[in-house]
Image (tube, rainbow, N blue to C red; front, top):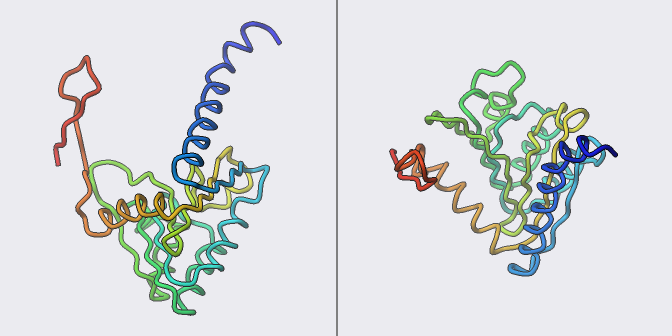
Length: 193
C-alpha cells in the first residue's frame, strides 16, 4: 500500500479504533452486551425487525429517516399485540414522499415530529427498557442494501435509561434545541433555546 493511500485511510482506521474502544468501555462500565453490525454486509434491517417482534412492553424510536415498509409494519403489529409504541421523527418526515410517519399515524401509532432549529438526526430505539438499537443506520431500504452504515444492539438497562431519558425530552419538547459556542476559539457551548 502506498504511503498516500495509507494516509487517506488513516482517519478511517482511527475512527474504527475509537469506535471499538467505546464499545469496550461500555461493556466494562455497564456490564453491557453489544452486537455490532455493518451494512450492507450484515442483515441490519432483519435484526431490527427481529427485536421489534420480540418486544413485549414498549418500543420508543427516534429515527431521522424512516421509509422501510417492513419495519413500519412490525411497529404496527407490536402495537396490535399491546406493546406501547411511540415514534419520533424529523420534521422532513411529515411530508416525505416515502416516509412511514403518515402510515403509522393512520394505524394508531403515536408519532411526533421535531420542528426544531436543526435536524433530528438521531437513530435509536429503546425496547422494553433494556435494549437499545442505535448507530448511523436509518430505517430505510437503501441503508440496508447500499449505504455504508453501522448498527449497535446494546443490552443494558442502565444505558437504555439514558436513551429513554433523551427520548422523553424529545417527546415532551424539553430537549436542548440549539446551542452556540461561547467564543470562536473554544468548543465550550451555551444553550440558546
